[in-house]
Image (cartoon, rainbow, N blue to C red):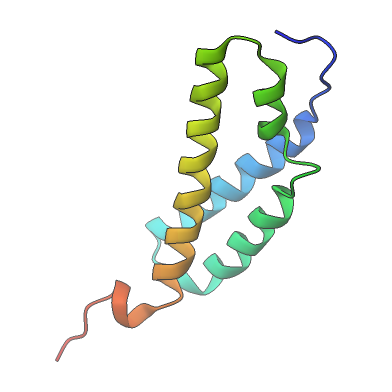
Length: 97
């Protein structure tokens, strides 16, 4: 592990809170809040402040770096998909016709 990299754990807590709030909204079908939560998540993951991206730099082990990068991609893709489908209710929710 590279000891010169500093991690902002507060950023991780805020990201986790947004992901938890998103999960709660999805469970309750509260789609009106999801777009805002996704926008707030994107702000927290700004390239300069995104602590998870710094984890990638903190590890020298190539396997760990690859796995962190893969998990970052999955997280980003998940937020994009959730935002897309919940902001397009005609796609996400079937009609009763």
